Image 1: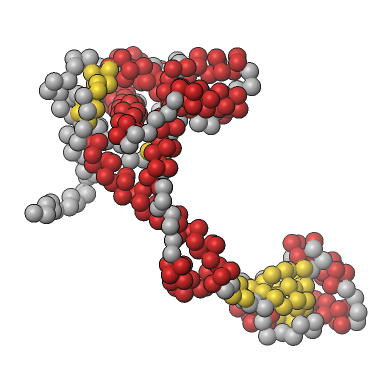
Image 2: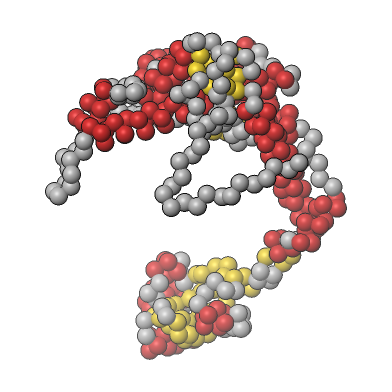
Length: 393
């Protein structure tokens, strides 16, 4: 199951130390990205409602504070709509002096920046809080449970791994704005998400022998190894130097000696002239042709290329090979099983999104592009909008 992560982490060392809940990254299924809007019957202090369960404004404000702290900038606060007075003041103080000839930023510019930042934080937090309810609701419908003991055990394991000292963990809570209850809630949601994924994929990894054989026949090249040749080479700048190197080799000097004296290719020179496991098509055309027509053990060259002149010897020929169906079977079986599970989960994701979108309502001002009655996206100037399609009857 894919997971979205909401980056609500504190900065500095604490951010580096925790790789899951302590990083402020919520593990939630990638499908959990929808909210709806419609205020009729919604409690007055709720920003959204998921199948009758309200998402309280106090929770929204709490996670907005965490999102602000995750920016990594000290003393960052949540932009307060609609005027954004404090945010504008902060932006004005932090703004660099404009380059020569460039206009100075105005308060209207800063207000747009504050509005954009607020919208981004709001969208993240609304997605986070709605996903909490979606995962919980889906788990209940599927009869999936996570005990307090499981949550506590996972919490303690991650905490021990990430924070050797209790003081480190307390510092994380202080700098991130989170509480232990926040962390425990996210650990619970992670465990529920994993169990949902396991249930959705259970039994979907079955692969038949016919499927394996069909895949093998269509993809034989994936299970083949081309001929490869181990070489000793010397590369020189001029033909004259290459001929001198070849003469030295013909007189009985070793490739290691000759490469040290004549070669300008540092990589092979450092290996005594060795260039192992060369496959056809890897070298420049002239050299490639010479390599794969040369006799084993015979010094060949000079061969002219754009890099200079090569003298070489084929030390070993590793013949081309083809895995049999039986040899390739474990790899293919694993691949197809994974594909079957992914296909099953993709179907689940599609249905999940549709189902929970219809059960989620948001208050005006909290509707994001993930919401049921979200405002239509503003098209990019010049962008051609697709023609409406007719719904199937």
